[in-house]
Image 1 (cartoon, rainbow, N blue to C red):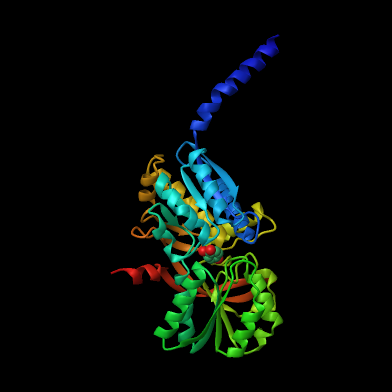
Image 2 (cartoon, rainbow, N blue to C red; image 1 turned 135 degrees about the horizontal axis):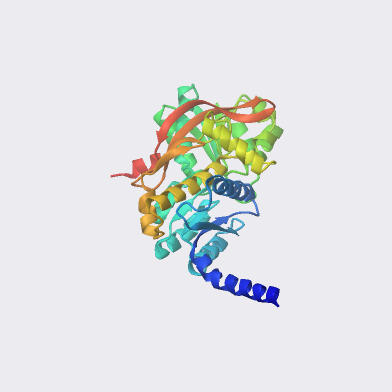
Length: 390
Ligand code: PHB
């Protein structure tokens, strides 16, 4: 009898406590491609978000943060539907993730309507931040590495190049800013080749690049496609053709680089993060990431996810726990901190990421392939936004 009364009391207590607990959590909608072609991005970002919370606790301002992870499989209509549900039903205080540009673009109008911050942790077309005043980005914009790569190329005697990019937002940005940089430096781009975003076949474009015989081939494909490109590159013997292969860091992504083999050795890329970045913070980040995820090595997507959480935690502390979306975005503007990538800042005017771009070379270190950084261009703003200013 006594025990029974206790059980009933405990049950009633649980019921009574439930609404109070719900009120005490702040829900964050994390929409990622966990399946499909872009799943490596989803897995990397989810792992980094969970790591950040394991290291920093889940109560930055007293209330518990609860991550609601949703898989959009990289399909924009799904991203939008999931975002709608998260806003209306779950009353999330922020949306985060966004593995591809079209997924962020489809959701931006909802963020504006609902006044909910949309933290872009992957997508990298310059114009995304202009799609809503609630977009804040911790990943990158392609004009940053593309312009840096062109500058390095012309400074190192490369006068002619062919570009090969995925045919959508970030690819067009990369093509535009690499071509402009080559021209500005007195070089030229003799052919601009593009491959479809979905299920690309790199063989025909690589053949065309080989036939054009430029000094260099510059490539951008989204994270996750680098291995397929590298395989075709080696199979067609381009590594022995005398054409230099240069790229954005998306191609020699730390998630896949190890499996790409010797054909990628000495490939020079421009990017914002390398797992071998030399800093105490990064060494700790990589080590902790590997303990939590033994079969993985963090790539730039992971760092962008980790920093997205750092940004949200700092903004919540700055607003003293006020979850109003407009207040949170205001708090994020101009914020700066040390990331595993190096120093970074959110541009207060554009809400876009400002960070170092590193020039790196693929090397084998202790049996693993890494992008070894050898030059730094400090605190690069989005060159496309600077150019668009009146
Ligand atoms: C994008 O879709 O904007 C995107 C995705 C993956 C990348 C870069 C850009 O590595």
